[in-house]
Image 1 (tube, rainbow, N blue to C red):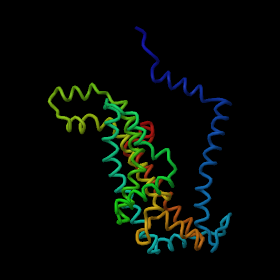
Image 2: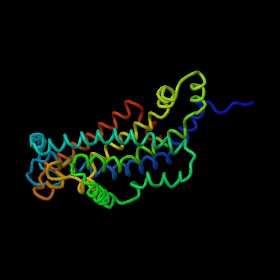
Image 3: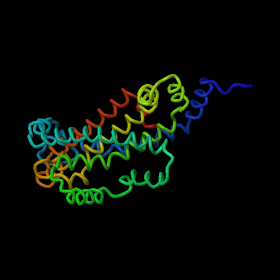
Image 4: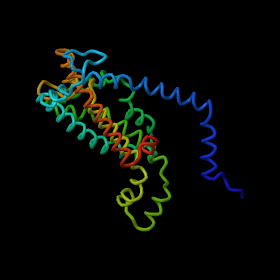
Length: 280
């Protein structure tokens, strides 16, 4: 039987398709789209180093004093610490809930499976403000007065669907024959999951965890309803700064958050490969 195209032939065909005038047009359009997407972020970064005491563009001069001011702001540092701890707790909670839920959706065969899947993914559909208000009403009726616990519960609710979606997609690509072989050779369910299944879905778990962390860290609509004056994460502090004193320290805070997101993406690329994770 004739063999298929070799890898070198596939690469040569790809190079031929992405060469010439058509490739120039494609790259130009792609570069324009990327510039359009990144322009707001670049604008924020540029304003954050302006020497002016007011937000102006183009920036006047160059200074890092606004970053020094931000890093000495106790309110911002406390909010940053709270947001990081909240995002880490949310990531752990979303993984503990989302991974088993994804297994149930992929491997389960019971009545109402489609309805349960729709319910678990519903936070992706409903407006975040509505979800936050609903969570506030539910937690109030349950008598929960701990703002930190309320924030953790609310963020797990809105971030779990990201974990579920990525892990579901990864599980659908898993070779179940390998799991059956491991069970036949004497491995129990836990060992089979840890040694056989988890390595195959690691990219999906990592991508879901990263999405959960970033959505939690930067979540304003749900946080607005569940936080209080004592426990205010970074999004609320930024909003207060925008209302009270809109100087370049606000873009400096935003730039720090942008850099944290970039570090997260680079870390994901280093651990499991960005393309592999996003393809999950």
